[in-house]
Amino acid sequence: MEHHDILIIGSGFGGQCAAINLLKRGFTDFLILERRDFMGGTWCQNSYPGAAVDVQSPLYSISHEPYVWSQMFVEQAELEAYTHHVIDKYKLRERTQTGCNVTGVRWDEAAQRWEVQAEAGGLMTARVVINASGPLSTPVVPPFSGRDSFAGATFHTNNWQHDVNLKGKRVAIIGSGASAAQVIPAIAPEVGQLHVFQRTPHWVLPRPDRRFSWLERKLLAFTPLHKLLRTLIYWQLEARVIGFKYSHTALKLFAQKTALRHIHRQIKDPALRAAVTPDYTLGCKRVILSNTLYPALARKNVTLHTTASGIAEITPTGIRTRDGQDVPLDVIVYSTGYDATDGVISYPVVGREKRTLADFWAEFPRAYLGTCMPGFPNFFVVTGPNTGIGHTSAIFVIEAQMNYIMHSLQAMQQAGKRAVEVRPEAEAAYTGMIHREMAQTVWKSGGCHSWYQSKSGHVIAMFPGFSFSFRRLANRFKAADHTLA
Image (cartoon, rainbow, N blue to C red):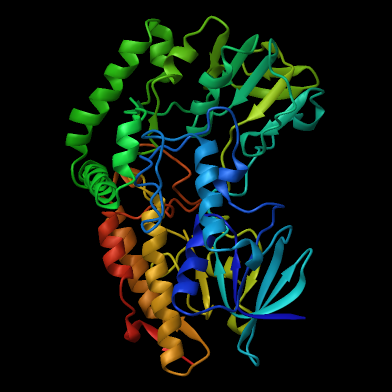
């Protein structure tokens, strides 16, 4: 049986940040477990056509690892290169076991350690487990009637099949969210016919992208200028919270009007305009940034199917719609999102007194600082419940969580203890505060149902406030909120 002081599950930005912070603080006995055969997470896995970041690149990066980006919103290949740059700089490959899918985690009370079961790695133990598998790592394909009968190629955008030639083919994209909004313009000029099956339209804002000139890239390589640009972008994005939480009127007057103008500028057909115009407040669902989606939907070889003409069943030759049409297809692409709410962790976790995390989360996922739960000592969740940020870089929040996790480990070390655990009353107070604050946000009261919400109706994906507020909360370890044993 293999023993480590700390096991990190997942090698994306969350896992990388955890490993780097451990190294900087002298915790060297750790191993990263990665279920795929390669490291890197989101930007190494999602290689679908058009894949790109929707937060400005100088901000969407690890704060102490600047990079000379080629443009404001970089594409997947450059983000993958950055990911490998970070992995190689800190020599994380030699501390990672790939092809190691974790199937269960159980707390051994007597040994004060976690037992971690993996398909390839067998049974391992660790004093501390940091789950960094990410909320957008388990793709979901709805159980459409006849789904498995289709004779053509089918795949999810998370696992794009690059060997499938789309040129001249009849293709369906099922879904209309962020990934679909990038795929549709990328493949529309190439395919013969493109059928887009939209359940609910999303608000789309112009994408303020631009390529950096040679001189700008040279200047951005100068760290103080890079930090200045990063700071300016951060505060510009942070201002969006005012609309998302404190003034829905301002949100409608400014951002939503901009989105409506965007529709009217780019789509001339009144019926198509109506089909892509949401009936809820901007921000309630994830806002899409795109200059190319609407022109793609308006192409002659593209057909948008709304709920009325949505999917009744999938047949061996294509899709039968609710209004009785048979749509012949060669390829079906699922852009149907991820198990990002009730399935934050994909494997069973058994804590003290044999209590399962599934039981603790039975009503809705919850965690103190979105990071730890009572009854699960030395178990930390990166990008856990209510750590999502709809207006700025997720990496900013990951780094804030790292501050809390490292303070927890150091508090345990300094006290000569083996376990740290949040008190139930501290978690309950924190969760109560989160959902009181959430009531006034657009995610709760914007008139839509989204993946931000649990099946219970609680918004469990988003943090209801400014990202600097979350960082302030996570920046120090409150001893009174924890027990050390």
